[in-house]
Length: 110
Image (cartoon, rainbow, N blue to C red; front, side):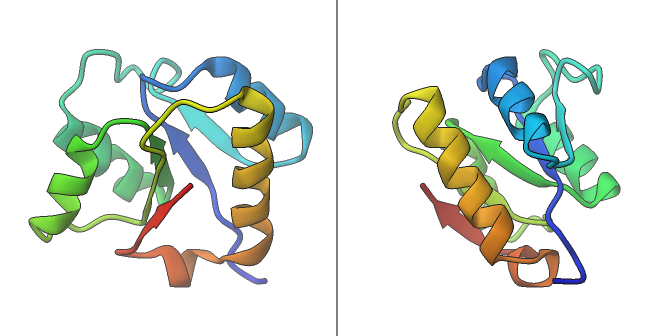
């Protein structure tokens, strides 16, 4: 796939997940690294859009923003916290199977 996904993990997601993804060669940033701790969800979505990144979150407010038609590069949402290994495996699978063109404006659920 020509357009590999790049992830932005919102502030509710452990940095250990970012580390696990990076160990697998996946481009990922976190809200902390981007200076977005405490930023609104709209600001986080705008940052991810400006960077061409798909947001991974546990925060259902991002689903509301998507339903309002806000532009985004994609949202991956999990309604419940799962074991870190399971989350990492699922995100790796998404990264392997989907590209940025497909994810643009779409929401995927883990």
